[in-house]
Amino acid sequence: MPDSARYLLHRPEILESLRRGEAALDRVMGGSGRLYPAGRLLVEADSPNTQIFRLRKGWVGRLRTLEDGRSQFILIFLPGDLFAVKSLFVTHSPDAVQALSEVLVEQVDHRTLREAYEQDADLATRCMWQVIEEERRLHNWVVGLGRGSADERLAMLLIDFRGRLILSGTLPPDALAYELPMTQEQIGDHLGISNVHVNRVLRTLREEGIVTMRGRRVTIGDLDALVRLATPLLDSAERGRSEFVGPKEAGLQNGNPRGSDDDVL
Image (cartoon, rainbow, N blue to C red; front, side):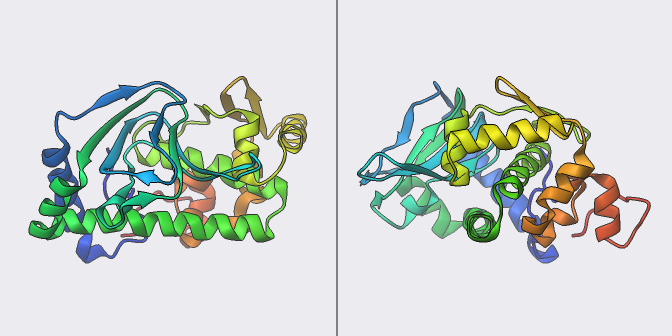
């Protein structure tokens, strides 16, 4: 799994600490991997949670369901992400965490991880990094929900998933297709629009040759056009990474019109 690339916007001086922290998690969580089917609740809303998880395979979503049945997917976790890290500090989770596909997750009791956290500064840095990365994603999503059009939100979503899957090593760097194990209703619950509106935007993208979604498979026909649509909602880290915007656009953002893939560390 790539390391320097996946820690977007990290300070260069903490990179080795992040790498050592990842290795420390391997030791703490080693041998704990379990498979769960799609739809399984890994954390129930408003209930005690004692486990911290690391996703090795598959997709997981954090969601909140209102009393009238309306739901909002708050964050989507992809391979390499830690989730339920807040269980180190709080007893209850206000939100549910659900497997969107079959998943392979490692897990550790909060007391075990807390002891390691207090003894190992590198492991603590890695855990805190996950919180920082979630904040970055949430800031982007708040801007998208508050100011983005439905077209821009969906484009950003598809760009974000592709980039993160590449950074995790799940997809090759030049991939233009991937499996998206979310229904149109779930996508709408993440975008804050109806599934009818999701269908309408997908139809427009398909007719313009930008994106096709058949079943659960997303195929990007024109990455540059998709990036142009998403760009107002992408942050500086994503705009400068070829995994998100392609080598040409990343090169322009980094001051290299030839489209260099050099990392900015």
